[in-house]
Image 1 (cartoon, helix red, strand yellow):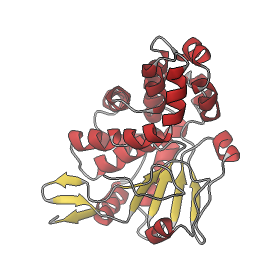
Image 2 (cartoon, rainbow, N blue to C red; image 1 turned 30 degrees about the horizontal axis):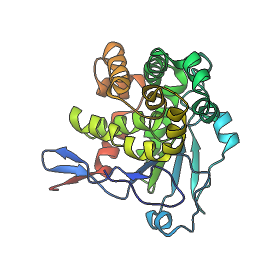
Image 3 (cartoon, one colour; image 1 turned 90 degrees about the horizontal axis):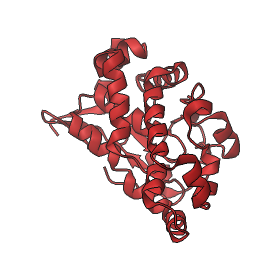
Length: 266
């Protein structure tokens, strides 16, 4: 799933063309993912060509206030705060502090060194499944996606890798993608994210910062997604039951999602 080279949107990707097996694939031009949209220019020809009608914002209130989304003319914004119930207890820095931490290796090591960063992300990914705010957010996302009148939809968080990555995992699971496809798609954002943060990482390591800590903060690893999938297995037994029972999404809505987003004979 190659990135879409938009000058004003970071980490913009179309889930389309991903193989679902059995001669099926994800329909192009219907569902997109990205990082924050505060710099999005609707006049950007790449963005305008996507025809996005709905934006789902998974960010916290503080993130939204700091960098509000730019919404295309006539577009609809749906706020779905995944971390409302979890951020204060997560052990992770607010997105606004990430730049500060990457500029101060000693502070980063004190707060998140020794494996604490990865442990915090694992807890957060489990919270994507377990907390009320996350369940409400991902339910709202799927209900919007399952509305037959919804046009092309873009969902995002700040970097477009964690909350957005779990959203993509849910959608691909609903569509019947296998485990390998789900993991490959999840990890595919690393190149774009590392490129975006490259100057900060270089500065961090030049000052003696641990490169593994920097990558734990700005990238994704299989361990993070595995934690969320394990939480689903423990609580619900399967992704299908998680969507139906955990998120409360009716089967008729998931059927619409499959119909809208699946290409057969591809």
